[in-house]
Image 1 (cartoon, rainbow over the protein chains, first blue to last red):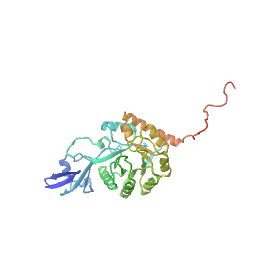
Image 2: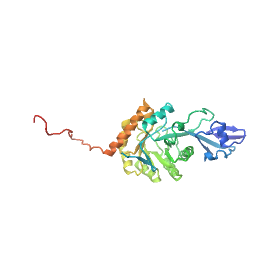
Image 3: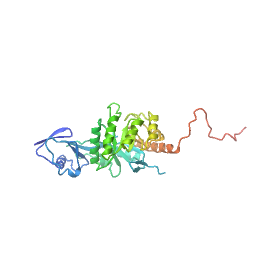
Length: 67
Length: 261
């Protein structure tokens, strides 16, 4: 069991997942989004190899309307 | 007439830049943007709703980056650090796209920029390879500092964001325009078409607006009005206005050949 903070909310995972697997489990894979882990960008090309660890803080963002 | 707006070495036909916020739906957003003729459109970067509305349409599907130059902003950021993080996420989101709009706010009531934090963020972003268009106070000294840091455009407010109060200090804008070697765009404050025309007649290189279009009674019609106002203002600026004569009139019709004399 690992604990993460995703977009400011605590979440538990049964096992350590890659960023890609996490996105897949939330129906977010393949969407136009960007991921930051502990303040550092996780480039798209590395989602599949980046394994999440206990205590990680993730930000998953999209573009929305704005001025 | 070939009169392109050049920002960071890239030419744009339209001098009107528009935001994508505050519209009723994506359909209205797209229709208004098409009517405005804008090629550069701003977007905000926000946390995605996890586990909700998985099938929800994405703004970038409505405004494909292949067709529009997407200008991610840092709206809502109050520190240089948050603004830099937001734009690094934006660059990742947009596959390495470097052109961004920096704004670091100082106060939630006025949305006035925090200039010390703006200068700090600009410095970091320029060093990191970003092409920074920067929302700033209408202060010629700080506008110059931003240019010297390497910002590719300075974008002073004409009045408060979303206020629609128009061009409140044309003299400061003129000071900024006259000294600038990068494009100067009015960002914020335009309320209606005449405001956009006035900004362009002052010599601004472009105008960025959102609320004036999105909160018009008919946004698509206002978008079309803004397109024409920016074009008209630009042409008037290039044409050069006639001198003002404060104390004497000058008839347009011949003074000779009048009957009965």
